Length: 143
Image (cartoon, rainbow, N blue to C red; front, side, top):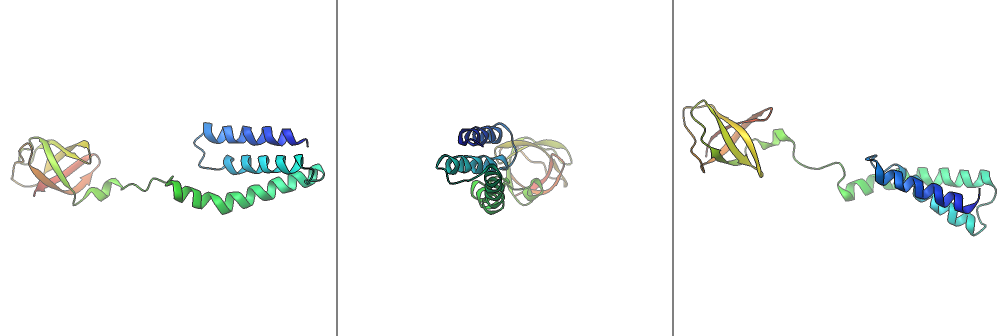
């Protein structure tokens, strides 16, 4: 294959990586195509079957060798806390929560629906502790 076709293929694959939320797959194929294009331009890649073999080998090595460390470095998998891990955190009441009733609290910059178990009312501005999470409702107790 002609070197510039490898470069076009590589750029197209890089564009696909940027345009889709694929999780770093096309990136390594695109980079491998660009490397093969460069090697072909220097006249070192040999016949077309050798170029395809080089492309396949580079892509597989890059994919399995670099994808995991790159995702870890960029923290692609999130790494944020799960909602269930809100238990034990402190929140601030933004709308009064009557005993056994429903109100609003603020936690981590977001407003949540809150309920209390016991007979104590929670007034606006009071701090409370999350006891459990049910869907989008936090069950809280006074601190």
